[in-house]
Length: 303
Image 1 (cartoon, rainbow, N blue to C red):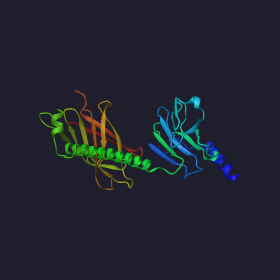
Image 2 (tube, one colour; image 1 turned 90 degrees about the vertical axis):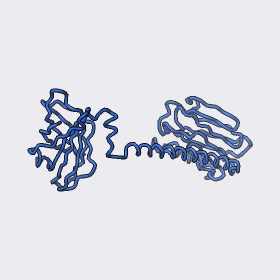
Image 3 (cartoon, one colour; image 1 turned 180 degrees about the vertical axis):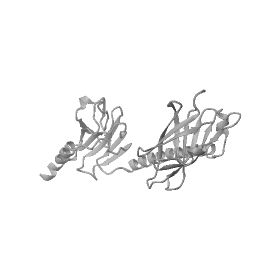
Image 4 (spheres, rainbow, N blue to C red; image 1 turned 180 degrees about the horizontal axis):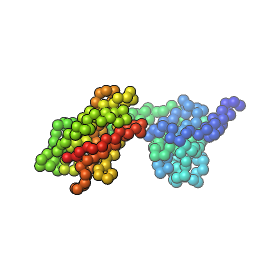
């Protein structure tokens, strides 16, 4: 009696306690051996818009829960292929039951649960009532070798792309990008050192140590060296820049290469669009850190 009720109890438990959406791992090809897992229902990963095929090693009769909802169902004597309902919610389960047609006992029936996992699905499920054949293992080995070969080829391609990228961009001294993009004016990149009145300026536990502003044909940038006086490290995240009567300049990048250390100058670079012709050449810069604190500095002269 207990042995007869156990499959039903497992089915009820799995139906009443669905897996959280998105927590199920999906295999492209799944193998199930009934001889080794006689009582355990199996979960199959499905997704709306994707076909999943279930193949058996002997003829079966298949019952599909809520079959009328499915987008597509194709049956064979030893297989069934399904495309799940479009309205199947993430984590929802639908039961697929298969009964062997060669006179096997009812307890030998196979119970599978189709579990929704949006965007990913098991392509093929192979169900073996008895121990898998040698041909099945050989076929799986061949598939794994082909997949390893594809992965190796993809890895080789990515390595070549990385080497090409490193060759093009790794040299920090190169000027060719400035020249080829037309950003290098005839007089080169112009620079202007901070005026003396800004050196030593202190605000929000930061002190200006030194600074330089730069201008190319299309951009301006501020190289700012700051010294933190507090114990909390400063990590620059965003910045705003204005000229004249609060005309805001578009900021492209805010870059801090290293974390700050108390009483040691650290670098922040802010790159932005240049002010329009006739605008003020004095810039107000506001730098924000990752905790929402701000550092303001006014009177930066742009070239």
